[in-house]
Length: 465
Image (cartoon, rainbow, N blue to C red):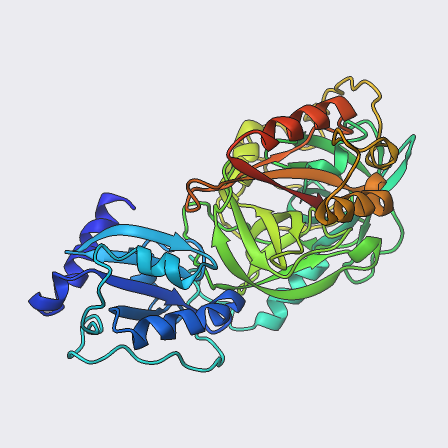
C-alpha cells in the first residue's frame, strides 16, 4: 500500500469512535458474485458469533474503501489496528487462520461501520445482483450490446502452420494504417514455430470471407504477447485500448471474445477476479476458464475497451490468466508504436483505404519482420508423457497420474506453467514460469526434483493454444 492510500485509510478509520479505533478490527471485503466469498460465509459468521470485531465491506457498493484497503483479489481480509493494516490475506482460508490474524486471541466487542453511527456488523446477505463501478476514462458507451458487437467484429481467428501441424488462436484488431490492420494476440501461439510458420487470418466482420495471409511483426514469450499484421478485405473498426494509467477494479464487469477450439468467435461475460496475483509481467485474472483456441483473444471492460490478452486457463479456479495493459504497452513501446494508442478515435480499416498521415515511425509494412530464433528439436509434451515416470520408484500419486493422463491426451497442444506457492508464507505472491518450448525430460526432472526438496509446491497448469 502506498503512502497516499495509507493516509486515506487512517483518515477514514479515525472517524470511528475512539474506543473502537484502538482495537484490532478485521475488515472482510466481499462481493455477491464471488464464489469463494460464499464459501467463506460460514467462517465469517462464526467469527461474528464468537464476538470478534469484523467489518464487512461490499466491494461493489464501497469500491473506495476496498481500494484504500489495497484489495487485489477476493475475498480479502485486512486486520486494522490504530489506523494501520497489521496483517492481510486474500482467497480461501480457514477459521483458525482468521482468528490467528488478531493480535489478541480473546473476542472483542463488535465494531462500528465506517462513517456511520455505532451498530453491530450486519450478517452476511444472500447473493444478489452486484452494483459494478466501472472506471473507464471515457464516458460509458451506454450500449453494452453495441460494445460487444464491435469487439466481435474486430476479432480474428489465427491459424499458425508449421512442419508439425497447425494451431488456432484468437486476436484483436487494435489499429490500422494504409489498409493494413494491426492484430494483438498472445506470444505462445508462435512458440513452436519460432515465428517462422505461415499465418492465416480470418475476420468476423460483416462481409468478410475467406482467409488472408498474415505477417508476424513481433512476439515476446516472457510477456506472452505478439503483434501480427494483415490486409482485410472489408471495413473493420479497430477497438480502443484502455490507457495503462487508468485503474481497473476487482469485481469490474468484463467480457472476452475468442475462438473455442478454432470455431467462430464467441462472447463470454466475465468479471475481474484479481490484479497481479502472480509475479512477473503485469497480469490480471478474470472469471471463466478459457478453452483451447481462445488464447490471444481480448479481455474487454463493459465499455468495450481492450484491457487484457488471454494467456492461460486455470480450471481449478475457473478463471483465465491475462496479460495486463502495462505488459501490452511494454511491447508497444519496444516497437516504438505506443504513441499510436493515445486514445483518439481509431480509424476504420479497408483494403486500399484512404491513407492518413502516419505518426513519426515506420508503417507496419515497413517494420522489419522478427528474426527467427534457432531451436533444437526436443520431445513434445506428448512424447514426454510416454517416457518413464520422473519419480525414482516409478510410483505415482493420484494427482501425478491425473497430470500424466492430461499430457497423454493434450500433450501436443499444451504449454506447461509451473506455479510455485510458498508454504511458509501463504500470503506471498506465487511465482509463475512458463516452461521453454518443448522442454526436455532432463529439464523437467531437474525442475521438479529441485522443487520437491524445497519449501514450495508445484502446480502444473495447461495453457490453451
